[in-house]
Length: 432
Image (tube, helix red, strand yellow):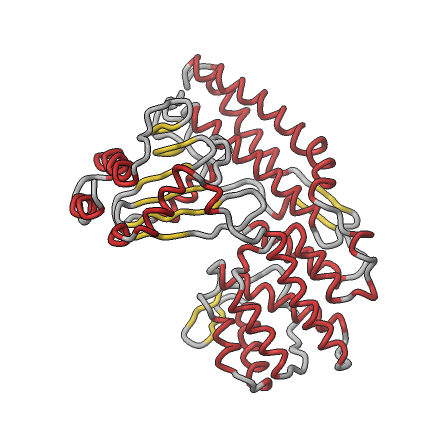
């Protein structure tokens, strides 16, 4: 099939999502000169479709070690399709690529462990270009070609280095260290929030850009934005601003700024995708750069992810996973007995009881530092809950609307209030 033939067939095609999905994919395989999905164990349509509860599978197309692929009708929300693939990534053996498609667009998301998502979007008209077809062919033949160049850790270290240099320059002008730290944590969160679309897109970046070298003007505008984030019903210019109620913006004190400060902040905001920052290490690196005199050297207080997992696995993940297996076995027995049977009612009660247990679960870190242990503990709880939701769906139970686990599950203690700020940001960034 030629690109022109493929485009003529599928542009503005009126077929429904279900009617067109597999035919579209087969034609795409013909266009790219790759095999079609015909191997149920390694490369197939409707991976995981044969579930006890019936319904759709985990992915419309799956290729072991390559990708999970979800199709939608043109114009549908591809972000929702991506969320479905992300939720089922464990069942799909964590493929390195997650692809969503509405026949007019194909969006390739990278999901390599330890690397950020660098999406590539290919519109149907671009398929006449050999470069676009080569990228798509690599999805099927060589996903490694699409691995991002820089790891999440490297991107995070670069970001922390930039903030450390800015903090140092501000302290050398005689500004008080904790005031500088608090202000820069607020700025960091704004950069993350605008990239995550919790704030209007580009609002903080544009504020810095439009202020130019006028430090006083920038300070007034930053103060106004922070004040809008501090309360319900806040607004900035023509934008309604969400309320950020975690206490980060309770204190607003913009330190004296220079044109060089503004340029450094603008570079950080404009040049980085702050969604790629790894919350498990950023808090420590940032904290170290802000107040090195008050902190031990990095090796003395930074606990790496692997070491933290040696605690989390036996203390949280493994016991809760064992509890879930007992509940799952009860659910299996309930399915065989029917939903109105004594077994069926008891199994559903056990499932709801397990979710309630997750909701009430608490983890306390009495010396939480930059929050890495707390973030990874919360992630472990979330992973267990997702596993429970997926298992219950497979057995025919109604899907849960909300997650029971969240930041309320974790508690941390620090000696001074300032030290809690990086920990809060670490947890917030990781939970969003």
